[in-house]
Image (cartoon, rainbow, N blue to C red; front, side, top):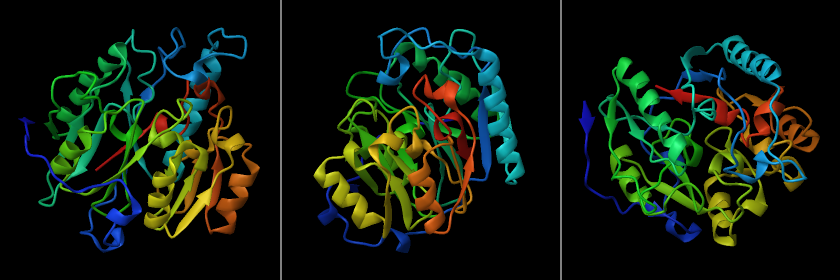
Length: 311
């Protein structure tokens, strides 16, 4: 069943002064416990849609497909070891980026306990075909779908690549500027029945919010200052009492430290080698869980991009 919600919601926060409440006092909502991953059978780099997909000489990066599959299997095994259920979806043959399954939808648990997904309007035309396959997965799992307007340059939205839940609270953080149109967040706020704090992303190297922000718990996040405007950084500081600053050298490729994922508010899965970030995590009570994602970073994604948490 498709739900076409036309209402807009004014609860869009773009400056620290807009935050007149503590997000931790908002209505609690369930925490996602299920993990969706897309098998990288067809993963490759045959086009460049972000700056990380090319080598220093300008050529497209080459993927070691056997190594990529082994890395994907290790990430899947890591979620299983941490106690999460993992559903595996087969990717489309001509959809090499579908392995980055954070992007095609935003799962929502409504106040009445109903489950739905907001369907993305992907910026890249080929990637947009991924949405139908992920939508079909959620239909099989009894999710309704909330429609976006017809896909156009002003109606782009890339799911949980750009739109992140504050764990356990009905509050979202959304990025815009490269893959998502800022005006779409009024619609997202209405569908999700949640305020959305929005952030302009200033560098094409941080083209999604999940490349420069990793939310660890409702008080703590990793973030790279260079990815934000001054207003955006001040808003992040207002939301998170503990904002852990990741150095640019570790946030950018080939490390992608901010594309980490903390599924349980304790363990933080990230690509190995970001020593300063790992020290920050330990100093603040988190456990780094290194998993090599180097083949996927060649395409501009790491741990967070490679999974979707759903309810």
